[in-house]
Every structure is written in structure tokens, then in C-alpha cells.
Length: 111
Image 1 (tube, one colour):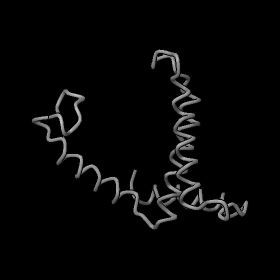
Image 2 (tube, helix red, strand yellow):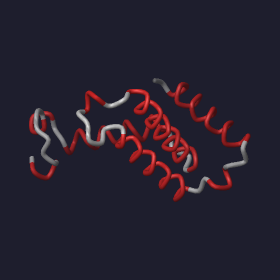
Image 3 (cartoon, one colour):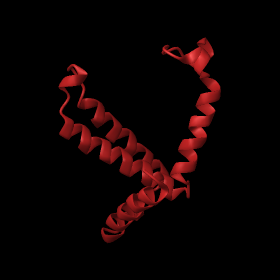
Image 4 (cartoon, helix red, strand yellow):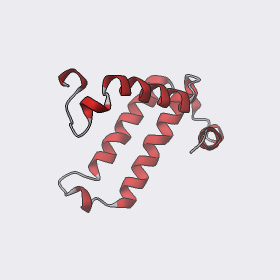
């Protein structure tokens, strides 16, 4: 996915929101709360089952909601999605160097 793909998704989300006059409800706090709620609904797809038994359609639906709210938060704060994700990956690479982190689930301060 490149920046133009992300921009296309953000603009489609913006159009959907504008057509319904919902921006009035979309402050940063409420968007973050909605993102958290949708992430928890994504968890429900896996609750009490083997991960392989999760329903892919439910995962698709809830993951789309998570992405939509994340993109809305990024737009609300004028954040470049590609830039912030790459910056975070760089930071994580410093915290989790391959030679220490490969094959382990330990937190960076336990490596």
C-alpha cells in the first residue's frame, strides 16, 4: 500500500463522514474510544476458539472498522500515516535489535 492508497482510503472515509454530517461527533477522544471498542470487537472474533477457527468475515469487518477509525484519527491530527508507521518501526528496531530479539517474545527491557 502506498501513500496514494492510504490517501484514497482517508478521502473515502472523509466523504462518508461528510455526507452524514458526523464530523461534529468525531473529536480525538471519541475517535480513540471508538477505535478501542472496534479493536475489542475484533478480539471477539477469537474469543473462546482456536485462532484457526475464527470467522474470517468477522475479522474483515472489525479490522476494517479499526483501520477506518485509525485513519480518521490520523486525519484529525494531520498525521501522515506512512511517516508515523515508518518512524515507529524505526524506533522499535532500536528497542528490539535483531540479534537480541529474534525468536523471543520478551519485552525490550528484558532482552
